[in-house]
Image (cartoon, rainbow, N blue to C red; front, side):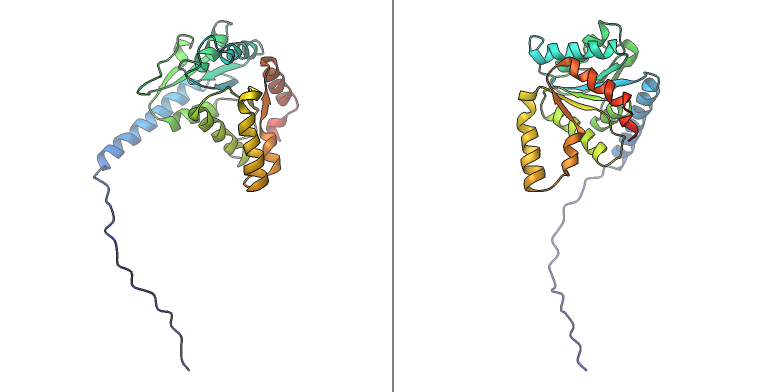
Length: 236
C-alpha cells in the first residue's frame, strides 16, 4: 500500500531585522509607567463623580464650540458633576473654565507634547496631572468618568471616543453616556458608521448605534446624563 506524502517546499530563509539592545531602557520605562499610574490613582481616587470632556486643543475662545464647552461644564457643575479634561488649551481649557469659575471640581490630565500643549489656568492645583504616556492618560479619563462629552476635534478626539465606544461595546466597562456635540460636525462620521461599517461591511451591530447620542444644545447633555442614571441604565 502506497502512501502519499505531501512535500513541503524548502524556502530560503531571509535575514530578518534585529532590534537594538534596549533591555535597560525598557526596564526604566516600566518603572516610569508604574509611577504614573500610582500618581494618578492616588490623586484621583477621591474626586467624586465626574464627566470627561474631549475636544480639540486648537479651538479658539471665540469659537461656538469653545463657548458651548464652557456652558456644558457650568451646567454639569451645577448638577453636581466634576469635570475632567486633557488639561490643555482649546476645548480642554473651556471645560476646565466652566467648572472652575462656577465652583466645581476641575481636573486636568495634561500630556507632554512637543508643540501645542501646556496646562491651562483653570485646573484645580491638586488635580493637575502631568502625563508622559497617552495610554496611562486614557486609563485615567475612563476610570474616573461616569460620562463622556465629545466636542469637535481631530485625530486625538477620534482616538478617545472610539476607545470608549470599544470598551463599552466589548463590555470591558459598564455602559456610560457618550454624547457628541455638534450635529453638523459629526453627521458625516455618523453616516459613514451607518452606511459603511454597519450596512455594507457588517462590522458592527445595529444596537451599537445606540451607544452614543448626537446633540447640539448644552442643556441636552445634562438631561441625558441625569436621565441615564435616574433610569439605572449603567447597571443594565
